[in-house]
Length: 212
Image (cartoon, rainbow, N blue to C red; front, side, top):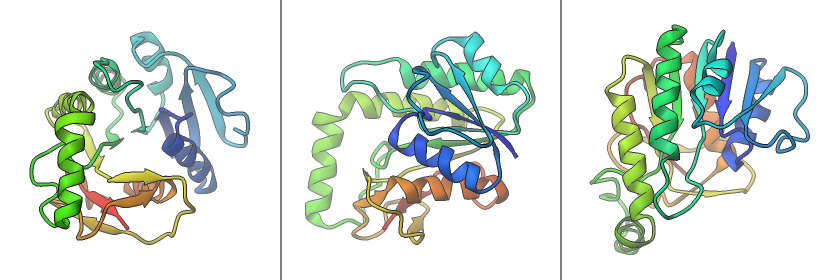
């Protein structure tokens, strides 16, 4: 499948590129820095640009069969990247009739995500939501509302804390909240789940939570 990955130079994005190639996809990696993927090879085409530039986004999406986004905030302060880049992505997908969209979200964006966690887990997530990541979560909500209101076949993946540990190839998936004690998962496993959605309709127009 021809896929484009936004945020390809980030931790999860690099895993999407690596695993996407391993699965035999024709991968387009969208990056701001052309040197950010020094080991990109095989079926990887690199497009250099800013996700806030609609022309660059359109160039990357033209001719694709699916879009994956692992874009993340560049700062904890106010940053238009997530909602504005998604506006351009959705417009380009519509223009070029690209149906499938898989996006990296964040657990805790929506109320109720922590209902099955321990008291300590709920306290940590509450602090992040109300203090440390308040602005980031607000931008995630704006981005996710755009996606939910679009005609795309979208899936928004909601992981908890991400680690650079080796992927286990096994993880838990839940529909309305993080799994019990589900406070962490490897970026490699999140990428594995995101890529698996390209061949499955199970989570289309849904927001699955994934955690160890």
